[in-house]
Image 1 (cartoon, rainbow, N blue to C red):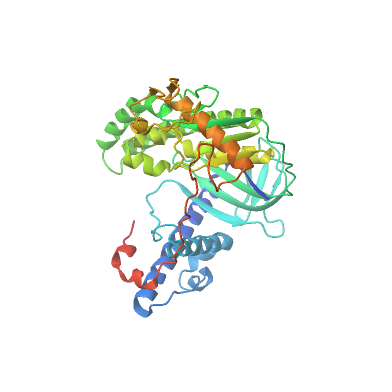
Image 2: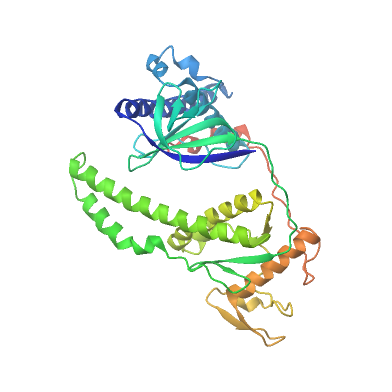
Length: 397
């Protein structure tokens, strides 16, 4: 099993220069190999297979950086290229030099990466000061060096260790329904009360962005304001991640199984025109945190189909009210049993019941209310090579 640890780095001046060279070389080799693949396919109709070593004879400055970093760039490109043919993603895009977030990945070979006395040994770079706030369990496989827009350096260390997770008996269940303003509402009636960090600093961000847009390009004042804008965004990100980690930890410690709806957050933000509110909540990131925190404790995250009518069903009698599809209806009265329902709490209770049914019956068959919940899985069809003839797949992003 693999697990990642992220630590802050404090490189000296020479190491920062070497990091900058490595970032540039990784970006260059990725773009060059992608351009050659496109050119080869246009001329011959075949896929070109190259390695970074073939480019070192022409571009000798590639020898100054870690060769494993260039090899990982090739693997990333090949992975993106394969995903395109499997219809999982769009065609690979060229990496931009103007992006301020940079990173590269290198592998551990024969102890080339190790931590000693508050420093981490990296290939070609040497020992870099690291703030290790917790112990690492397992064998180091690879390290990803990242530079943030605020000029901070981090190392994400991927380790491999034996799986010692023991599954627990599922007794305490809870259902979670997504809420635009509160992040989530539980089947027990509790609301997360998300602080909406982006909305709090929205005015400050707008003021700084206006000042930044009026400065001269290339001036020191423009760079200073850019740094201030990045600091505000970084503060929002850190506040959000801290909040999501605490909430997911609280749920994973208290309950044995968490039932959650399988929502497409990207489609929701586009279709409902709630992009900023949906992005500020980061419900997808919260689900990811909840998943691995429950897994490490031997517990389960139960995914309920997005086609399950959780908001329309009465949690008491099971009556389906199709009139509550309108999101503006926040509470409704069941025509069958005359019970008043809060839309979010009622949906969370139904999700919890459906999660319990899934653990006992399975994902096929009928649910508790006699409805067929089987859904056809999308058929994965490989992308035809003839589709690549269109020039729209080669536009630089």
